[in-house]
Each structure stands twice: as C-alpha cells, then as structure tokens.
Image (tube, rainbow, N blue to C red; front, side, top):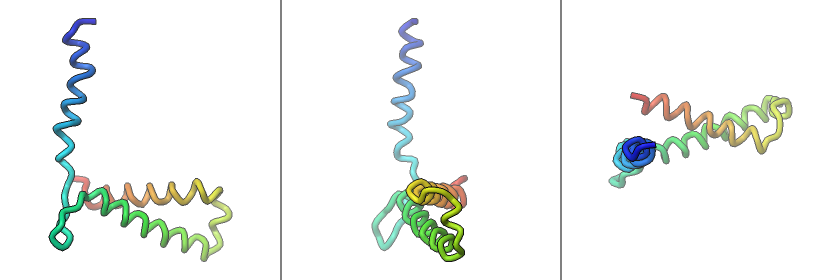
Length: 89
C-alpha cells in the first residue's frame, strides 16, 4: 500500500470531520445559541413521553415488548423524525 493510499484512507476523513463540525445549525433561544440537535433531543423526549403515555392509556404498551427497549427506541425515533422534519435541507 502506497503512502498516498494510506493517507487518503486515514487522514482525509479525519480532516473532513474536523472541518465539518461547525456545520451544525444553531438556534438563538433568548440570546444564547444552542445546537439544533439538543433541541431535537429534548423535543423527541417530550414527544416520546406523550406517545408512551398514550400507549399506556389505550392499554397497548404490554403488547409492544420490554419497556426498557421500547422507550429509548421511541425516543430515538421521535428525535430523528423531528430532525428530518425541521432540518433536512
């Protein structure tokens, strides 16, 4: 393996990762800037809590599986959907 090939496989992804870290959308909330992924995580948490509450209220939660697997998966699903809805450009 030549030096250029090794450099291309290792150094370029690291360099691109360092330069692309500042490409996150920022939101201004009362004068302080927050990364959009934090807002999406918090909104996903609230949405998953509401959905889980509705599943328990309609007595569907016991049919889904273990709650320790379902609740974080629902949280991740809500977070990713919110991110795609608001920030996929």
